Image 1 (tube, rainbow, N blue to C red):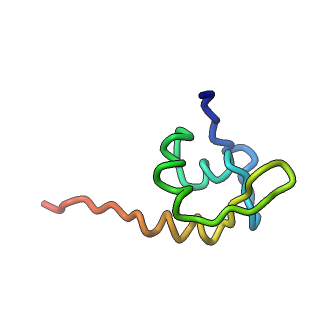
Image 2 (cartoon, one colour; image 1 turned 60 degrees about the vertical axis):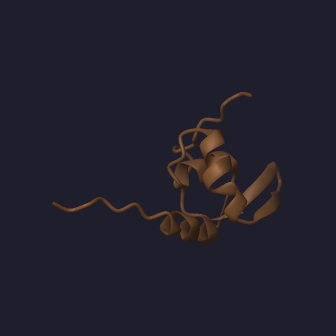
Image 3 (spheres, rainbow, N blue to C red; image 1 turned 90 degrees about the vertical axis):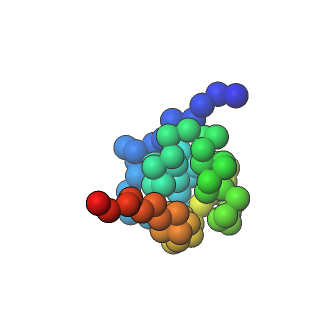
Length: 72
């Protein structure tokens, strides 16, 4: 399977993102990681060039994945 590169350059303020932009928004470096951690938990919408993701849902999923570090 070909890897999809996260599209950081075209990530601007907008409501819907394509998969490469959604990967950049959620800081997923590989498509496999995105498909495991993000995709099953958000809705997808039919876009003009494939599947789109709604930014508030991506934000909600990202905030649900809080990682805490132990304090000393």
